Image (tube, rainbow, N blue to C red; front, top):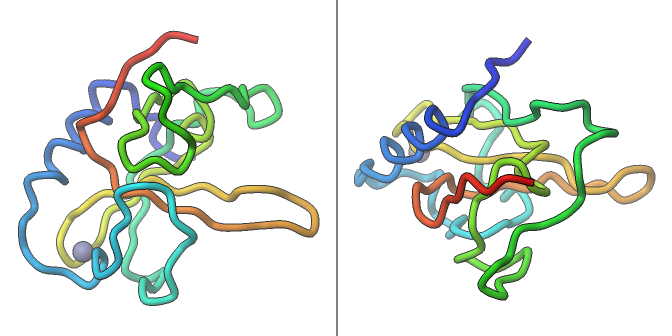
Amino acid sequence: MSLLLDYSLLHELATRSQAVSTACSCVNRSLVGWESMPVSLPEEQLREVGTLAHVAEEEATFSEYHPDNTRYWSADAPIAPRYFPYNRCNVYECVECGRCFLRYTEGGGYFVDRRIRLLTASPMVDAPL
Ligand SMILES: [Zn+2]
């Protein structure tokens, strides 16, 4: 079982992650918005910290949270843990530098894409559903 992360824990991880300023291969490519998992970032470099999946995947909403007209791919789209896709993400940290990332698998059936986004404390919103 993964550790269930509540908002305050998530925010704490994000704040800690944001403070990391050392150069590291995990951020060779900007992951400030959602991206497909870069091949330059090996699986072994990431360690799972916990999950934001508080409800079963089939019950988790597909609604997105964009009060300021951002879009899914926007680098400034708010991280709202109760909304898609954050509600099905796990949080990982880089074993080299400690930066944290959100990850989930998009799609199903014949279309599967592993996505990743750098975890940042801003913009992050504890928006109710
Ligand atoms: Zn790193």
